Image (cartoon, rainbow, N blue to C red; front, side, top):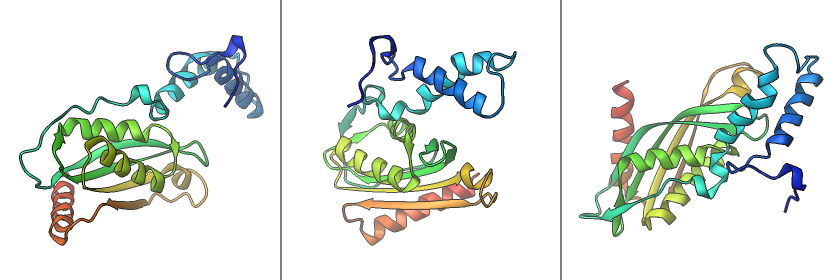
Length: 200
């Protein structure tokens, strides 16, 4: 476990601001910038630490949305499409962003549809890879809802590709199924995604 000196304890939002400030100053200096020039002072003092505190909410259990459930009245597939998400590539600390689609077969409980979007947003706010994030959303929802089957698809543009490297903006798609979706459920999921994309 990481040890913090008494002067650099993490704040309530989980980020050690003194270390974040020092690190941002060093990065600016490494880029040949003057961290104390007008326009950059608040960058390292406040803006970057604040941004990374928000963008890593998913690493803190206390930031997880409350997944209040209700008794399920049927085991019909529940589908939520077009959920926007923003995450950080752990290799380059650059964003990847896109749209998530989620479906689950209820066990004894269902959750409000807005909670699915909030849960995806929370899981997305961490340093990760798209493949892992897709699995984390699916396995997390299985645990949260005690659902016998969950399907997740995520489509994203990675700025580490668009802004550097091949400098091409393309979409990466990842899919995960936990449990055993029937052919009918897979078709319902694909149809819901297609309808949602056609309405944009």
